[in-house]
Length: 287
Ligand code: ADP
Ligand code: MG
Image 1 (spheres, rainbow, N blue to C red):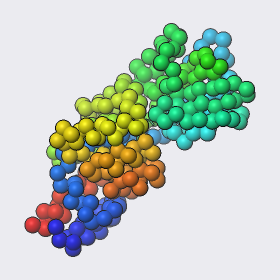
Image 2: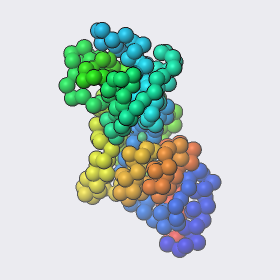
Image 3: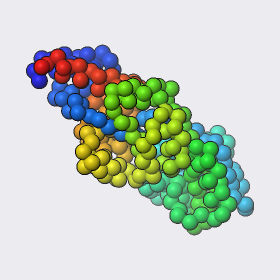
């Protein structure tokens, strides 16, 4: 590849809303045959909202929201933002949290009003009423957030975000370029499958812990696939760096943008297809 042609490709990329780390990046897109898409914030907007509130018997709904919201207020996770904003709207001002701990890919813990509160997927065993609430929430395509304090599960919150308007078209374009799309998420399988169905993806890898996302990319590569990964989160950074080609959503975190080879400035997944088309065309003119 001649440097001039690659630089022309880089300049055209900037016009399309693609920031390319270096001209050599275009070369690595040539053989890509698989595109792994993170769900939250990549295929979906990542702007989640609180929907249903299931308070178990003996727990006032207002208290459930106040304590869960207080702990989530200290977290940047899209689920946490939804819980904190929804709790504030429905239950008023949130109290302070102490001893806050984030458990990546699972949830958060902290002390609020003298209680040890846990929010997220931190419990393996649930009382039947909570298990039913989780089941109903997930059946509706929502992410279920379990709230517990002082060692007892107190309720379940259902949050959800919206699929980006451009995602289904982007997946169709990626397929036309001969790429196999794979949806990868830490979220539960039923939510993942409902998003996958909405955008036309049939290969779904769900309930993956943040540190396991790298292993998934490595496994696909070990199968002989050449992998592009598109992601936005802190938890996607290592996988973006491991993939043959890492594409970061420009609307995402700094960690993802630093780890990626390309940035999709506007957060529009269709531009991922543009990037692959551009690099193929640029490389074709070089022969
Ligand atoms: P994704 O891969 O879709 O970006 P994550 O790996 O960040 O998702 O999170 C996986 C799951 O862990 C979430 O869907 C949620 O159930 C749970 N979780 C993570 N962080 C939190 C939090 N702060 N509060 C509640 N639940 C959380
Ligand atoms: Mg994400």
